[in-house]
Image 1 (cartoon, rainbow over the protein chains, first blue to last red):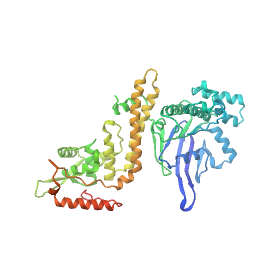
Image 2: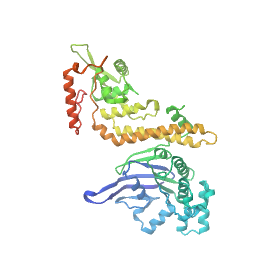
Image 3: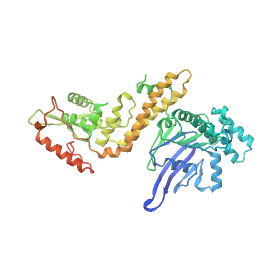
Image 4: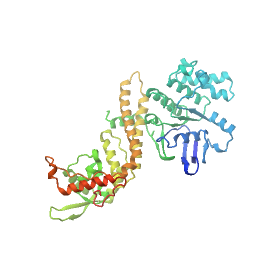
Length: 246
Length: 226
């Protein structure tokens, strides 16, 4: 089943002569557990698409279905609840709360959802430990490297066990090594934990971790391609041979 | 680099004789011009004809030696379409993609955007395979292989960024006519005074037409540029 379904999704800003069409009748389905990268030149509508899928913005026309529920039919409180339980968000600038430590930051969606503090802390710690942060549980964001802060943010995105993670340039503020770590983490979340991921990126090496790449231009899908067909050792050997390395 | 397919692409535009084909190479492919010798054009034409992909339609009889005018066959068009629909993932023949793209831009038998997207998918699949393989290796024992894979990944990344750049400027390339083919000169370059006056006149005309600029010169039937 498709966790995300966009039907003729359209978003315009302004009106009359100054009207800008940010997204123009986009149709897109993301099956459960798939890792999708959204790419395209700046201003192509990538972030608009992600905001609409995440219920952070409303479409001018068309609709977004999450697990079959049309976001445009929900009132604010229902939408907030669905966002907190079904979706996790990862941003370019981490968006951690400076006065909270790693566990408190990662536990936030649960705390806000009324889960008991002990339970919330326990579940948050589990994800942080899985992400190799067992020694940094009590650290505040300013005591962590960029890569560590983003791992805390990914833990926060997963703590409520959502089926969908939305990531907007998750490696945009990281060096190449930390970027690869976060991309590896996202890949594992999709492949080992079965979560669907929709990630906006402009970095080809990060996009290559995904199973599928959707290219946008001027608000429309211009190419939609699966890149993960067979990634066994043989394919890698083939690719290396072709690159003149073997 | 596939000289066969580049020739098929030129023939698909309109029938030409060997000499014309040879001249068209340099103007269409610019720096990616594979430096094909006239003899290679004629042997390739003979092989294309043998394979049923091209045929010489007529023979032009002038004062000089006879000229065979070659045309593409239906089988040739099918072969050309197959070539357009394939990505090029061998780094050692990377220019083949460029020749393919320019053939599509100039000839119009394939959508250049589609050719570019096919290439992008091919490179992303290679990058995905290499990335997946790299991440299965143990950095404590297999660092040398990891570094080698990083090299391959970085080359693919550079190629993908290059494709992005081409994509952004594809419409400009399509509007821009390639420079007229320069006839190949042998020996010492002639002194300015010895230049054929008709050629000088043509150079002057070209400058003014380029100077006026904004509108692209339409291509004439015989493959030269107005």
